[in-house]
Image (tube, rainbow, N blue to C red; front, side, top):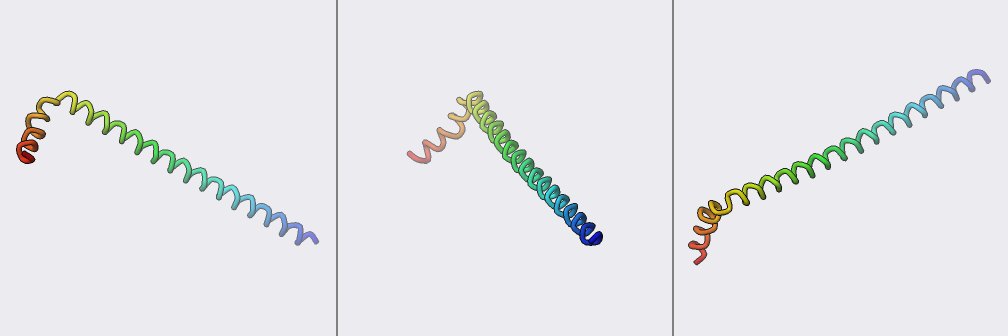
Length: 75
Protein backbone atom coordinates (compact mmCIF):
# COMPACT_ATOMS: atom_id res chain seq x y z
CA UNK A 1 0.00 0.00 0.00
CA UNK A 2 2.84 2.36 0.80
CA UNK A 3 4.26 1.95 -2.69
CA UNK A 4 0.87 2.70 -4.21
CA UNK A 5 0.47 5.85 -2.08
CA UNK A 6 3.97 6.97 -3.04
CA UNK A 7 3.21 6.37 -6.71
CA UNK A 8 -0.02 8.39 -6.40
CA UNK A 9 1.94 11.23 -4.77
CA UNK A 10 4.50 11.20 -7.59
CA UNK A 11 1.73 11.19 -10.16
CA UNK A 12 0.14 14.20 -8.46
CA UNK A 13 3.45 16.06 -8.56
CA UNK A 14 3.83 15.27 -12.26
CA UNK A 15 0.30 16.51 -12.98
CA UNK A 16 0.91 19.74 -11.02
CA UNK A 17 4.22 20.34 -12.83
CA UNK A 18 2.61 19.71 -16.24
CA UNK A 19 -0.28 22.08 -15.45
CA UNK A 20 2.11 24.78 -14.20
CA UNK A 21 4.28 24.43 -17.32
CA UNK A 22 1.21 24.63 -19.58
CA UNK A 23 -0.05 27.74 -17.78
CA UNK A 24 3.38 29.38 -18.05
CA UNK A 25 3.59 28.54 -21.78
CA UNK A 26 0.10 29.94 -22.41
CA UNK A 27 0.89 33.12 -20.47
CA UNK A 28 4.18 33.60 -22.35
CA UNK A 29 2.47 33.06 -25.73
CA UNK A 30 -0.31 35.53 -24.84
CA UNK A 31 2.22 38.13 -23.67
CA UNK A 32 4.28 37.73 -26.85
CA UNK A 33 1.19 38.06 -29.06
CA UNK A 34 0.03 41.17 -27.17
CA UNK A 35 3.49 42.75 -27.41
CA UNK A 36 3.69 42.05 -31.16
CA UNK A 37 0.22 43.52 -31.75
CA UNK A 38 1.05 46.63 -29.71
CA UNK A 39 4.35 47.10 -31.56
CA UNK A 40 2.62 46.76 -34.94
CA UNK A 41 -0.06 49.30 -33.93
CA UNK A 42 2.53 51.76 -32.59
CA UNK A 43 4.72 51.45 -35.70
CA UNK A 44 1.67 51.94 -37.94
CA UNK A 45 0.64 55.06 -36.02
CA UNK A 46 4.21 56.44 -36.22
CA UNK A 47 4.34 55.81 -39.98
CA UNK A 48 0.96 57.51 -40.49
CA UNK A 49 2.03 60.52 -38.39
CA UNK A 50 5.33 60.84 -40.29
CA UNK A 51 3.56 60.62 -43.66
CA UNK A 52 1.01 63.26 -42.61
CA UNK A 53 3.76 65.57 -41.30
CA UNK A 54 5.76 65.16 -44.51
CA UNK A 55 2.70 65.78 -46.68
CA UNK A 56 1.70 68.88 -44.70
CA UNK A 57 5.26 70.22 -44.59
CA UNK A 58 6.08 69.64 -48.25
CA UNK A 59 2.57 70.05 -49.68
CA UNK A 60 3.58 72.53 -52.40
CA UNK A 61 6.69 70.55 -53.38
CA UNK A 62 4.70 67.33 -53.62
CA UNK A 63 2.05 69.06 -55.72
CA UNK A 64 4.65 70.61 -58.03
CA UNK A 65 6.90 67.54 -58.47
CA UNK A 66 4.52 64.59 -58.36
CA UNK A 67 0.92 65.62 -58.91
CA UNK A 68 1.57 68.11 -61.74
CA UNK A 69 3.58 65.64 -63.91
CA UNK A 70 0.95 62.98 -63.26
CA UNK A 71 -1.73 65.45 -64.31
CA UNK A 72 0.19 66.22 -67.51
CA UNK A 73 0.55 62.51 -68.23
CA UNK A 74 -3.15 61.90 -67.66
CA UNK A 75 -4.19 64.91 -69.72
